[in-house]
Amino acid sequence: MTTLIERKRDGGVLDPAEIRWMISEYAADRLPDYQMSALLMAVFMEGLEPQELDAWTDAMLHSGEILDLSNVPIPKVDKHSTGGVGDKVSIPLAPMVAACGVAVPMMSGRGLGHTGGTLDKLESIPGFRTALDPPEFRSIVERTGLVLAGQSETLVPADRRLYALRDATGTVPSIPLIASSIMSKKLAEDLDALVLDVKVGRGAFMRDLDRAHLLAETMVGIGAARDTQVVAVLTDMGQPLGRAVGNANEIAESIEVLQGGGPPDLLEVTYRLGEEMLMRSGKAVERADARSRLEEAVESGAAFEKLAEVVIAQGGDPEALHDPGLLPSAGHEHVITASSTGYLARADALDIGMGAVALGAGRQRKEDGIDPAVGITIEAKLGDMVEEGQPLARVAWNDSARLEAALRYVEGAFAVSSEEVVAPPLIYGEVS
Image 1: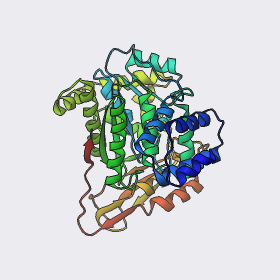
Image 2 (image 1 turned 120 degrees about the horizontal axis):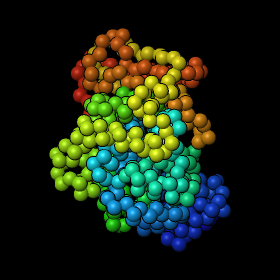
Image 3 (image 1 turned 135 degrees about the horizontal axis):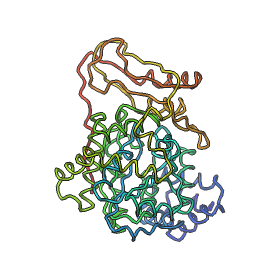
Image 4 (image 1 turned 60 degrees about the horizontal axis):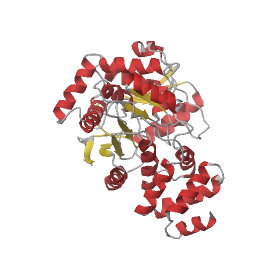
């Protein structure tokens, strides 16, 4: 292993057999974290050649069990986001698409760094279980056409270990490591197609459009090499998506979307990704038809009922969907107001995400617990006209020390300009 670390550190190339050995040994806990950490840093600095990335992804994919969903007779399409702040899109999107006759075997993750995790949000629904073994995962997909779960012990175990190690070693924003992590999990789901939401901006792991585009191309290429349709949509993460940042409050906002409401930016991204999922599944040929089908699923209540169905199937209390007041809520609120009248010029997603972590809505260490009740509600978006003293954000808190730590980030996240501000586009384009 020392030889491999040194070769990659010095810009050399690892051959496929070496990569397979290394990944299998680490998954079996026969390589120590400190050696794999050194290798990850070398990859972070030097990258992976195409043949290395192919071997790395393949080794992770085959480090455990691969799902067999051949008994599911309808198209199987999943969606994955590279991570953002306030990005609860998967929660309303998956039932909307499933209500249109597409199976969505969604395998999600926990919060990583300053970005939230779909599993953490779902677990704020009382009783909801995200830890499913492969037989139960398959059974729920076959019965409901939808599952919202985490990685099991046997599915891509190498990635589960590497995911946590990357977060602890500063090697998260590496294009080959992100691409292989996402694609190994998704290829293990036996999908017909995959739609990726690649976030761009201060609150994303890809800060600039060129690197985000490269990540998208890398993942699309991995899918093409394995005969899986993949399309990547590049979306903005300069400011939080929607209004809610946290866990229970993001579930409440997701319910709002499924009941026909929700913030315009969240709706735009959700529907665009849903359109791609329906078109890749063959359920729609044109974007307008796909949009119409998704809107009908919401208006008829079918999408909301699909979420309720999967909540019941995974042990959750569906009454929390009908009455979001049953979700966890914090005991206190702190309001951040505009210091002057003008246009909102800054609502920094990174600072707001870090503030949410400090508050207890995310993890500073992988062993930390989550407080599902705390969070931040954004009251103004970039370009909005605001008055002096107008609320910009509401911070729901339970612990005064955590509030103090969170405000160090959140109070500096906003800026007001006397000159008119034009908000950036929400969607930058796609790669397929």
